[in-house]
Length: 343
Image (cartoon, rainbow, N blue to C red):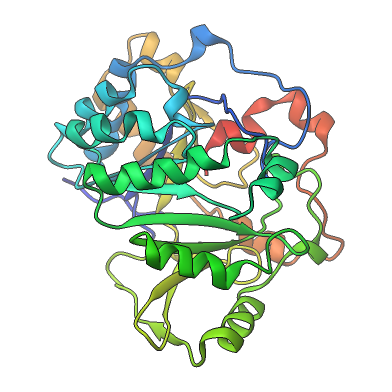
C-alpha cells in the first residue's frame, strides 16, 4: 500500500463514505428545513461501484472507512456493502455512524457482515426534546438500537452528541452517566456552521473549555488522555476521576485541520477533500465512462497531493461569522448539504 500525502504532509488515510442522502430525522444542526432537493436515484452509486472506489482509495493509503448518510440504514441491503468492503484486507477499520432509529433491526446482520465499530447519534436523553429538535417521536428506538448494538457484539459503542446552548448543554453529565451504564463512550461535538446548519450562530456554540468546566463541577478533576500521534483522531479524549473516558471534538473553536487525514465521498460519487469545501470531484462520471482503476488512482493521488484545505481554521478567522450557506444556496447545490456530504 502506498501512502499519499498533501501539501501539509497529511496522509490520505480515512474515508467517509455516504451511502444515501436521505434521512428519517430532521435535526436542527443538519436538516432544519421542511423541504429538500434530493440526489437523483439514478445517480446513486451501486454497491459494486462503491466497493471499487474503496479499493482504489485503499491502494493510495486509506485504511479507515466510515459509512455515513443521510441515515445509512435507509440504504437497502446495507450489510451486503459492508461485506464487500470488509473483504479488502487493506481496510483495517470499518465503522458506521447512524441515528439509531433502525439499528435494532440491523445491528446483528451488520456485525456478521464485518462492521467493526459503531457510532450512534444521541443528542438528548429527553424524548420531548428530541421531538422538538429532530421532529421524531422515536427516542425509544434510538435507545433500543444502542442496546441491540451491544448485544450484537460491538464492545465499545461511541455516542455522538452535538452540544447546543439552550438545547442540551444541561445534559452533558447525564449523557456521560448514560454512556457509562451502557458500555458506550460519549463524544461531545461543538456546533459547527457547515452545510445544513442554516440557523447556526456563534452564541449557540458551547466550547470545549465550557464543557470541561461544566463537567468538572459535577465530577471533579478531569485529566487529558494522550492520543496516538500515528493515528490522529478528531476527538480529544479525557478521563474522569473514576476512570470513565469521553471525548470532545472542538472543530469550531480549536480546529484540527493540520492533522486531518479524512475526505468524503457522497452517495453519488462526488469526492470532497474538506467538509467546508465549495466544490468536489465527480468520480461517478469517470467510473461510468470506463476509467480504469489506475486512471482513477492517478486523479485522486494528484488531487490529494495538491490539497491545501483548512476549512475550519479559515472559518475561525471570519469576523462576522454566521451560517456557512443560506437556504437558497443549498437548494441550488444539494452537495453542500451535510446530509449529502456525510459527517
